[in-house]
Image (tube, helix red, strand yellow):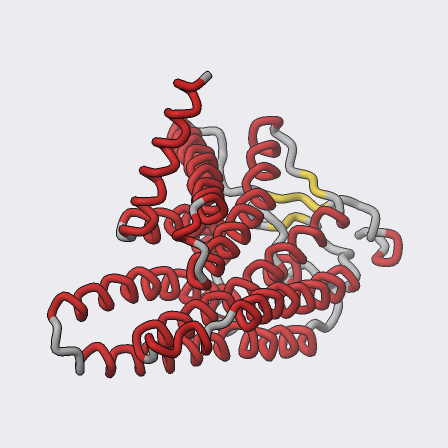
Length: 315
């Protein structure tokens, strides 16, 4: 057994998500493809929102922040996992481990509040369209975005610092493909009940409070949509909101499953699969959902491609 006080500099061992069978090699290739597609899709969304004046609205500004968070999320998880798999090494230093926990929780918490801000934006746009410029001003939009980043960063910093403060004097093998606080806490050779209670309270604040705001916004939206006389207006409102709700359901559902499930019901194998959904697959779905079903984004993409072709011909 290692001495707890002298073990802080010793690396952890990530057992990973895949082994070297042909099936797992195929799955690994799919994850890398999803990672590249996610980066390209979110980068394209950010570029379109920046360069197209018609997308310079609060809704698309919030969407650009969501894409930025998703790019940072997959970039924190997948490259390290891929390097470990390809080089057949599973070590991760305590510093890198703490960094992953900080970035993951910061982005996850920030995205929760950002999705709540997007729900409020849709509520104002549908229920109070004439007052939209006032109720959804540029100043308020910046405040909500900054608040989302700051609240997530504070939560991430606290949880990363506390997680790494525990002594790890038994096995340092983390049955995961990245450092996640619940997986790391299992290895601590100290009483972690207080921290687990603290983490649970943080989850209530970072998950359930934004989720309650989202449900409240969409309940009001649903009531307003049902009162609309125009079938075309109802269809447009439902299409816009269903896309947002699909993202919300997947993101919050996996977050609650990982961080708020009772310890007695936890399964390391299930946790790894669910973590892969919200860290790898959800960032891919966001640009697809918001672009494929969005006429404004598709129009912006066409204009962007035309400009690129014209600039090439001019050269």
